[in-house]
Image (cartoon, rainbow, N blue to C red):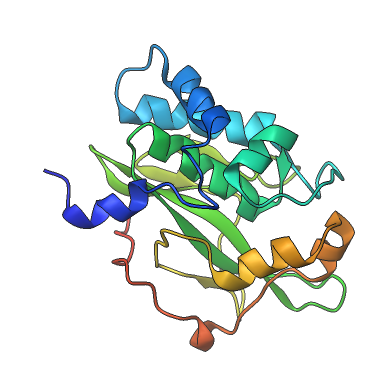
Length: 209
């Protein structure tokens, strides 16, 4: 039996809006013919990674936030892509949450920036982190449970792997993606937070894999 707390990771919301007809239809399409939650999750991962374009990598506007917006415009920053990935999984009855890393930046005078990715609850493995931001030179990302295959690992001083799994995006992430209407503005104002200042999630910490 799955833990009761997983219900919050199946909810549809304003941002992870899997009840939107287009999102739920795409989720059904991706799940067609799959055997088990891991195969469905892989299909959803590959779709978001490869067919939804990272806004900065591909220099694509508009700035998107809600899962349905990301699907409609086929572009999003890492945070927005994680919202769509979570929505597609939840629409298929697979619990999914949001995770964050703090990474070194060095661009536009920003020492660090926050990076968004996902945690997926798979019946055979428990929580598993996956990053559908897209592949670029030097940064590969795969879906290979139970082994994580992430494009970034926080190792440098000041970087952090936040263990929390959030059912909704952090407020300052939402603020960034709603305040700025152009990808250049977002890139110059990527969200960041001191490690000691991050509010705690109500959700349990991610199980180590």
